[in-house]
Length: 198
Image 1 (cartoon, rainbow, N blue to C red):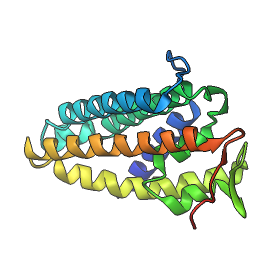
Image 2: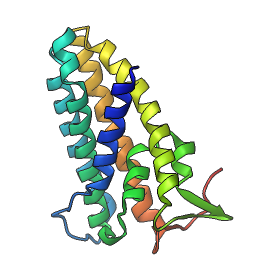
Image 3: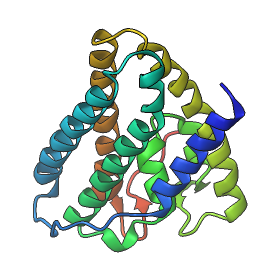
Image 4: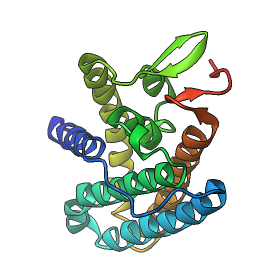
């Protein structure tokens, strides 16, 4: 993976977590049910975007790789914002929480570094700039490996696009699952109600 691709991935991730979208959804008395609907819709949207942008084979497909990832991550960020809104916790959605929700399933250890664990896991209100920068660098490296796999799939027309669409669908469901856990199981001040697993 070239340094330029790594830098592009890091730049897109930084942009996505820094530009938290607003949600048009209102707080809901039963947020889990509404969130599951939002997760299904977002997963379908992500699959359609990935499938459409992955259809072009070879070099033409390579040109759509970073735009496709950016579009999927932005859709996932909107999903996280919607789930926070449904749970009445939009004001708690920081870029650190956004990063955690979007990428916990990519690298749990790195995302846990955004947590301070003094017995109970407590999410830092604002992670230190250096810690965020380090986490972003490590995460970008992990994501760049996924970019390489996506690039290889683009050389197999139709079948590759279908596989990537299925992956985006499942990936988005993972993001939704994490966000739902964060905003329904964690109490006020982003504090888990249960002990964080080691």
